[in-house]
Length: 159
Image (cartoon, rainbow, N blue to C red; front, side, top):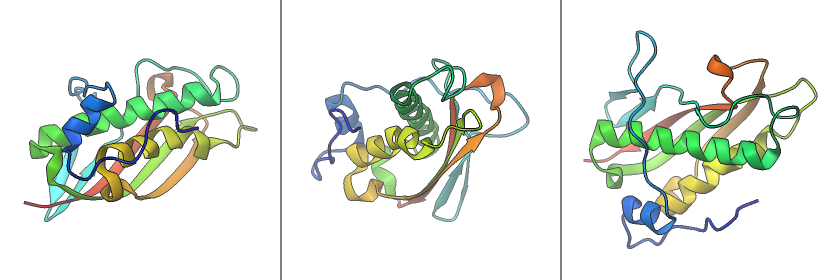
């Protein structure tokens, strides 16, 4: 399930690719605890997990795979907003290294990778080859605020 998301044009900026997809970065979400949205050490940027407000409930009971796909895409947009707030320009992303996706799902739901494709497809559409990454997609008994998906990410940044 890829929809209209293809591989990013190499000559465009990540922001231009987002605009071409008809997407905008949301406002930066305020942390709900004693943590920050991202931490940079050397040329690596580690993000805190980002959930979604628009999609609540469990995959396999309350939400379809397609809704989960859209939830993971929105979660990635939230992450990209945090990244942009930290580094100022998504063009500084040298490589998406890894994403870890938590999917709020029933015990018998086993399509977490299909749900996480929403985030992965978006990264490739925005960053091209630099957006291809390692990934884990795991099912969780519950996530904060009953969000459908929460994702965290590691990126390599260039100056």
